[in-house]
Image 1: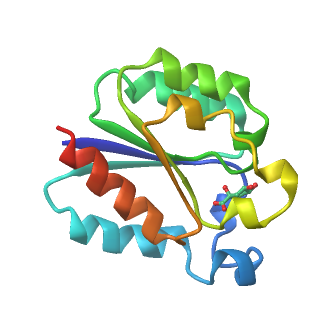
Image 2: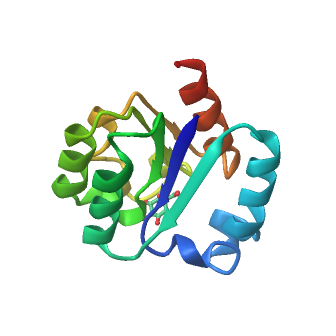
Length: 140
Ligand code: DQA
């Protein structure tokens, strides 16, 4: 099984960035524990601060893998292009947000991606990623 984890802008700073909201663990550190939990899964991890690069990665892997876990950061709230990319490919996607976006500023309440995803996990911290993977694997 192959799963793509995509993190969008500013998520490379996890651990350093607003730790009261996003925690103090780096994603690379967390990813090691995810790899241990799913030893039989080929996990592809991609982070970019550039919208087009996120789209390119979805195009590159989205027809051959078993699922996409996507946290598009602030592009969640702005990007019709990313939503179109998720529609274009065949892999099912789950949207994840570390923080509870509904308890934050109103501009974080709307997502262009949610309608293109099987479901959405928000506010459960980094655990949201492993829960999303668990769901995608259960669907195969
Ligand atoms: C986020 C929530 C977004 O509103 C924000 O722009 C982020 C991170 C989250 O994981 O909680 O960059 O996607």
